[in-house]
Image 1 (cartoon, rainbow, N blue to C red):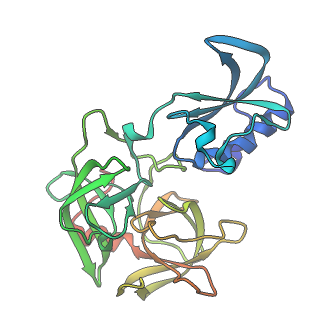
Image 2: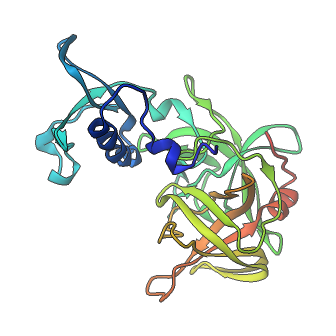
Length: 301
């Protein structure tokens, strides 16, 4: 069964818990979308190091607990879910200690940010990150993540022509950080790179829209209208999949890789979406095989 199958995530995490607790756990999983949340667990409640009560509760593990008075009402975790207690604790693997595909990346001085698509290897056998070229409009070559501007890579090579819109940046990780190839929210790395199949269902992790699904409605030589630019190359035209995400693209998703749900093959590099006011939701992705070939990059890294 696929790691990203929703039924896997929403199944009870352990045996021996009540149906009500299992349902509360399934509801609480939505909080994993919050950047400060590292885990949603079923376990005992503790107070000052001592276990409180015999019944398990929903444990929300966060990077740092914040004063509820400083938060919006909608951001405060409830005390209970359908009668099941909720306990918020600090801990887990901090997102800052891992660099994973799906994270927001940006160049100092650039107007917009993008998404880390996946890890690849350059012609010189250097470990690199793959993303979209058009997000790099700043002055330098440094690539950062996070509000504290952690340097993670340095821009190496871009391509922006009939072969597609792509960029390579060599990894330059700070002490204590490591690269993890599993895509955020999907928790697996692509099985390979290949061409898309018409009408196939694909998914991506954008730094803004998070995990989204779409259908490959058309593919071929397409003119991508990115608002600030137009580019004709081999590309995929993506629309919402029946029963899937209503949203295909958000600003900041550029650079994310689209992966075939069935084969887990990476097929496209996201570069644009529908303009504001468009009557239909859609997205554009460059053919990933063409982009990697143009950059001289190989996968897996």
